[in-house]
View (spheres, rainbow, N blue to C red):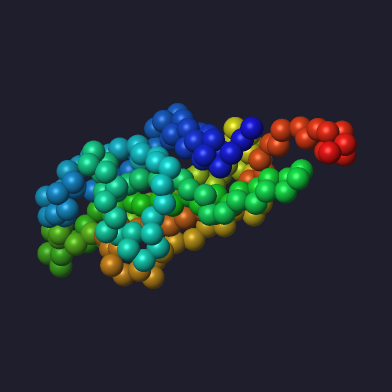
Length: 185
């Protein structure tokens, strides 16, 4: 029987496998939080089963060995159960870090990250969306359409990171219901 937890694990493992298969890397944000001496490190974004609080997600500690960006979080928005139907709304949240700095007037690189994080975010969201559409079924869950995509761009305190999400519903495979037993009860 598929539950919300097993479904989220399947989606997490699916995304991890696809990211690794395609060697999808993004700029890692410096671990010390200073942006004036960046590490030029590209990593495959880690995927976790977790959710960001909407208003304070920029300040959320995500784990000691977990980089501050990029990352992908998989979570459940809500779940519905009926006698012969079970569905769940899935929320995939992503965080990326700007990969370049603005140039100063004298053409030297500044310490101010540019808007490339937004472009990287949109590319990542679209890439994930395409992998989900191609698969259509992940583990025991069948994807329902449409897949919604959005960003948290209005949150000015997220700079130099960019945050966005995908949301969609899945139908979970139900175990067979013994209707004879129900009718005789």
